[in-house]
Image (cartoon, rainbow, N blue to C red; front, side):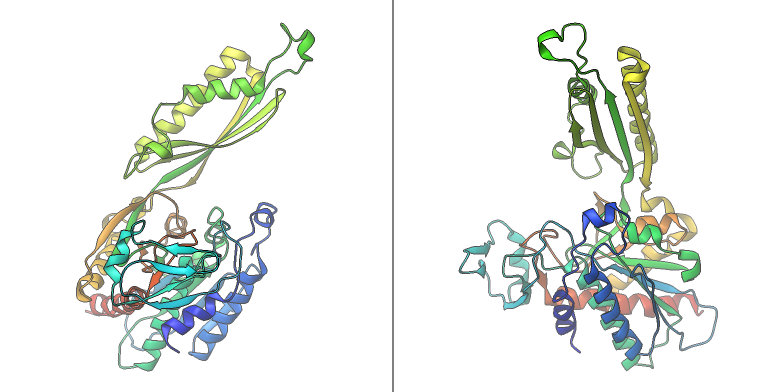
Length: 412
């Protein structure tokens, strides 16, 4: 099966993550994720791998080594779900791109415009996979699944290529708090290092991301009828607004880029009696992250002193740490192998700090060093998501090359 056909088959399965079910603890949060896991399992079994699909749709698979020696086990990960920004079924189409705009849907006048997405110019002469403009494409992260399965099929068709044990992990519900990775048992899995494929254009490589935390503040007011409110009403909504005003100006997502951290006031719900405020805290450095969490703790205590200890309650928690923390010293070799694979294939590396989380950050915290490779897709979480075919093929080639280089490096 060609990689494009493989990918298109995956996009035909709706795996939109279900935030309500996820919040209720259901995993996978949508039935399509299990359908996709079972489909991939059948393909991998047909290729000779040992496969297990758990009740929560986590798929693990093993391709045994075809050579002896004490070689490390390398793993490749992807996620089954697609983001909930758009929930319609995907109707993918392959376009021979010759420049200019791409009409996605003539009836609804939906167009992928080169003026808005100038990087399209890099793919003139390539085939590009797009949607009909009514859904996500799902290359985030079905392109990764296609690239990994295609790489395994290539190895099985070329048994002369020596390799150690290779493992595959597919996880559900990445799009809502990396839930599948958090439930993944890395110790039982038994890999020595790994890669996720969950990034963007060809050449991109991620080995830095946020140190991430959550903060929840609850402001407890006192309600009263407005006609007799003087001296009685204590408006929790205004308390929350005053707290927000205490946060450092300009340190919000809409004002920051690159390695600049932020506080994101992402949800406020309540009334005059009680208001719940939720924030995300992000910083690339451990010291910067700790300083931000300390500031929130200080602000919480200051508000308690200002309005009374019972007026404000809060909880600060860590979500995940920067994957870079787990890829230092003797654990840096997965980065070196990825860079070497790019160089061998003539791909210019483009290391980027990811302003977000990915499964590899959680897996790395669990002791499985895990950088992030490109899939080749653009415009994740958008109806304008697209995937150049040559980039998808290159993603699969990188997987194969890393496997080759792992044998070459550790069989000496």
